[in-house]
Image 1 (tube, rainbow, N blue to C red):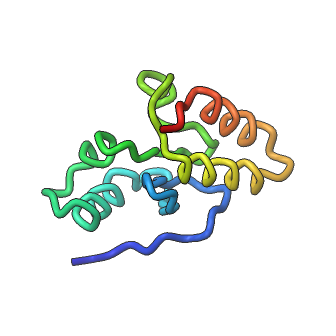
Image 2: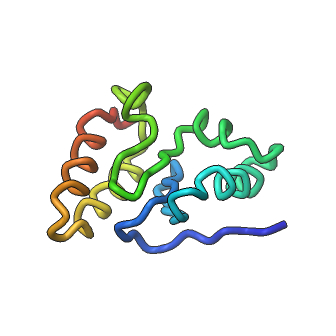
Length: 112
């Protein structure tokens, strides 16, 4: 089975696990990467829905989370995820759109 290792945060799309680990992926590879991560973490059939049900955050290349449009408001996130979001904000540099989107995500999230 293919395994994916967490990486240091960078301004790039990817997945953030409940344990705060960051798994970057290309913009159009969230689903395929998510299937691998689902099998790796949960031993399931590789459904990305298992990641979303277990409160993973799908992050797009502009810093927008997939859930921001419909279910992110008051969505529970872990403190470790919030720490990773802060790290992602910090690597935003001069990219104000990235930083604004990460800020919105952090404001809409409820830490559990």
